[in-house]
Amino acid sequence: QPEAEVLRRAEITEASSSARPWSTAVLAGLAAAMTTGLLVIILEREFGKIRTPWHAGSIARTDVFGHITATKTGHTGVALIADHVLDELARSNRVLGVTGTSEPSAESTIDLLASDLPTWGLTVLAVEKPTATLDPASAGVDAIRIEDLHSIDELEGIAEFIDVEVKQDLVLVDLDGDYDADDTFRLRSRICAGILLVALEGRTRAPALRATASRVRRGGETLLGVLLIQPETLTEPVGAQVSGHRE
Image: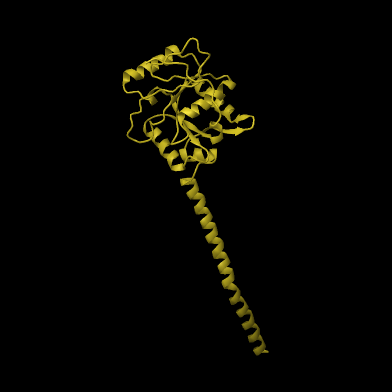
């Protein structure tokens, strides 16, 4: 009886010891796969391309101003942007700056907004030069594009022009180039009540968006939010262009 008992214990011990390396290998493999997957997610979030509104807002550390997507019948997501714009207008903030990273350009974004926002009762003005005027014979203009300002006098001139001449609801200022580097003279930003940061879905990278948002804050400007745009929305023709200007 003792010999049989010893043999039985030896058999059980041998089976257990032979199974243990397999289970250990499986657990180690699962742990490695989970760690690798988590690392990939973190790297994609921190250094990858912006693909969702949540991703854009978390990287820029600001609210999501909107997400414009393309459909067969038009664009979606503009109504939310109109709501946010109306909130800014209620606070008497009608001059807003627009800037992106490398793409999309503020000009193309403003063209897009200028063609879509009038659907919601919001008129957007277009100006080419700091001393631009509206052509009385024009049927209308859509966005504001101000070239580089080089002096306080020019800044005061465009600010006075907006206050006296512009009767539209909304003024969007092209700020591309102002936040490409830390050491930049950002005079155009001074006429804006806040700045809208734009990212292109699937193209703008997280580090570029994060850096631009940081420069806006370090420049002392108010970052209103981040707007995510599908590339397809920028390929369609835009509305009316600027009718004229004077130097």
